[in-house]
Image (cartoon, rainbow, N blue to C red):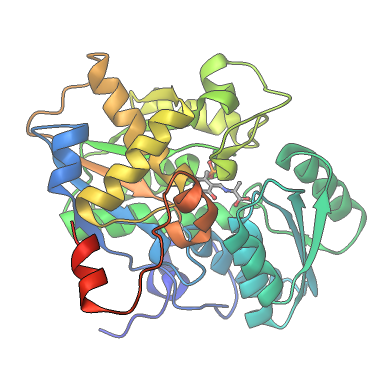
Amino acid sequence: MHWSGVVAHYRSRLTVEGEPVTLLEGNTPLVPVPRVAEWACPGAELFIKYEGLNPTGSFKDRGMTAAMTQAKHDGAETVICASTGNTAASAAAYAARAGMKCIVLVPDGKIAMGKLAGSMAYGAQVVQIRGSFDDGLRMVRDVSERTPIALVNSVNPARLQGQKTAAFEIVDALGNAPDWLCLPVGNAGNISSYWLGFREALADGHAASAPRLLGGQAAGSAPLLANAAVDEPETLATAIRIGHPARWCQALWALRESAGQIWSVTDDEILATYHCLAAADGIFCEPSSAAGVAALRKSLQHGKIEVEGRRIVCVLTGHGLKDPDSALRDAKLPQAIEPTLDALMNVIE
Ligand code: F0G
């Protein structure tokens, strides 16, 4: 079957109008990861929803095709967003595709290089702010209230419409929802979207059950867990360095309704999981993406989850190549050798 992108493929199940602005996003693989399962949740059947394989390297493309389709339909000429990086790159690419102007606000110095590079390459106007994502979101909300510039952050309902298609794909691939769905939580748009998608799949008979949700927040940026906003969020997982999530209430509702769990994971726990995913099963994600798997492992270590015989899906939200600095930070770069067989034989371990 010819893949047409998430808006065209799931059109009848989305409340989005307009000719799709698409880069043929979605249709990402659900990869079994037996070795990571042994490490994180022995006895479970573990799959990775590898969202880093979307056109701009993150799950944001699902929501962005929907938001940009609607914005174009509504006659917008310019779009704006605040971002920790992935939303920016995605908005920039889809705006280019739509022939629209794009402005992105990113926290100065707290954005992975691959994301900045993408935003620039796709031709967005990049504005670095001396503040956090939360400051940026407040600023772009103000701009979109005062001007015809369309806001494409996940406070835009079309974003959730697009992002919920990941839940539809998981149900289509497995024939039902998994027992657990684990994912990182930042601004909380993604967890809200998945829950919307799984509830709809259950209501319309595509799935026989809904999963329990398990969210992972970075320890230095865990407002949902603390039940209090964090004014100065800190974590090396910069994608989820967010202290005032816009979809806070919706995320709490999704967690409650699904009988879910929310965990905070330290940067060390995130990095250990990040390395395990790449080295044990060949899945390279950006550090933030590993927070869902890290939270699953932590829940098991604390005896809070039954995994034996359970089917679990962890969402890896962004590709590892987005953030090469994190991959190289603790790596010992090899010394160059002479181009001879002897020299090579000497270094082969
Ligand atoms: N993982 C990655 C790689 C992300 O980029 C984000 C969010 C999340 C997880 C969390 O998703 O915000 O829906 O809870 N990135 C946003 C951005 C904030 O600007 O790119 P969420």
